[in-house]
Image 1 (tube, rainbow, N blue to C red):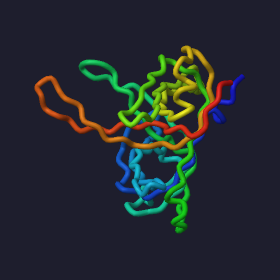
Image 2: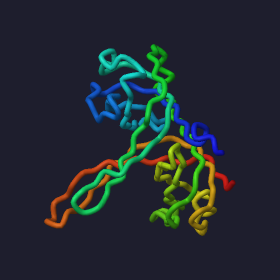
Image 3: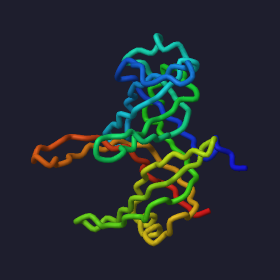
Image 4: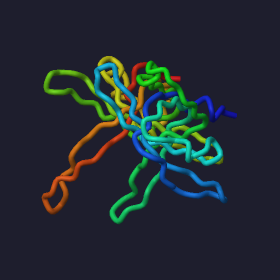
Length: 205
């Protein structure tokens, strides 16, 4: 039997940028959503969505500006819409600690083990940089799975170009946010945010 805790591990540090709001309730247990800002070495920053249970900590204690370190999992669920389901991603908190150490602000590590569930999309930028997008299904308990978009660069991108659906892979990287624009049918431009794992280590199991 697979270890469902070890195949999806996230550890990040950052600042809380919004007060938690009620997200949903399951069997009487309330879950709250808020966002954490974590720094990149490139001096950019990522603002990442977080889901936390009321059983993990006192929700009222979480304040904007708090520096926190979070361990948990990167999870997904399908949100129905009028046209098609939308994949919603968030960091599911197992543990949360407060800290005064600003070094934690750039900590962002995700370790995943799962299966490629769509054909990789390989491409080159106008400057010749190799990129590949893959979608990895990571098993969870109760026969559920999380579907995590990942982006690979350089040799890793070229290596996974022809991998088949069902290939088991191990991935390590950082969770990042990416702003993009989508053109609607009426011609208007809608600003959106995507979340993905930027892969630094990649191997086939």
